[in-house]
Length: 460
Image 1 (cartoon, rainbow, N blue to C red):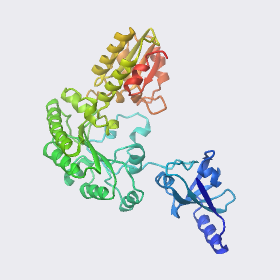
Image 2 (tube, rainbow, N blue to C red):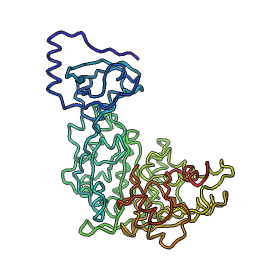
Image 3 (cartoon, helix red, strand yellow):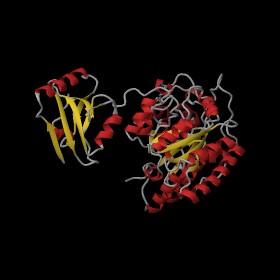
């Protein structure tokens, strides 16, 4: 590690530098903390200093910070607490952290979606839920940092140039259909940026992409789905994967575009097509490339493929291969466990209708091996309507209704997917404490990991 702070400058250079930073004061980000013994600590940056630029380029957000902090050599310009401008040249290892923590979130406010998608889940939410659920974001930065899917329908040329300049990979893109007129209909946006030239351009820039199709019956299925698959396949390996997911429809669609749920027969035909395409891709690329979501298999009432068919689970966060991965982890852990004592004499597990048959089978294996008294319960999603059956959209109200008058035991195990990250709050804004009080038992969150699910029932 070597550091060089630029100090020897002419009076004119210092004057111009100070003038530049005074003009840009308040345009950068103030440092909250500096990690001890980090590069930033060694160079002399301290809490209260305001970082203004990297390599004489404006410090816009976390994208700039991550881009330059990953480099071996770059300059950093900041205004110290005295108001004096400082510029430092940093030399370091590529994977060595810079060590700055800022007062403000480097992403700022997420960019709102400019589409009016005819299948938008947010538009199908009932009233009275927490405000954050009604926010529609369409921010490519969130796609890069968190893996959120975006349509890029309103992406400006300036932002596209920035994606190229900052060498952004990965991006997660909601393609839905490559027929441009049909895509405009689906997005409810006549001015939507054309997707085919945009994807070609991103591939040319070297940007790696994961893509998805939310499938609407009679709209982007059939020949249109095959056309979409073949176009995206043609951009492999820059387009790394494609997931096909059935549209989610709630019971709150009054006044919205008329859509119908994907039927069992439709889901079966879609899976059959996808499995043919996977065989094509395995022969050509050595990977399946295109995958039907777990929900599609559940709708078709077909057996979920084994874990090895998901090629390392590139779309696991999109509900593709989640059950197969959970099953693989569960049985591997189960076979490695010796006799262990249960944490409770009697307890219960609750999940949604879709996952219930699977979780019931896993619980049966736990009971068999460890002789634990575990009851398994299914909760119907009455809050969103009968068509919604995934566990992650259950509310505390649904859970209370499912368990009314039931012998739960000392504890109830639920998936952490039911709760807002790190806050212990359900979609209907009620907390775990509220539910625990109503059910008179302890509520335990379990990760969506098969081994961790098993471990939750056993003493250390």
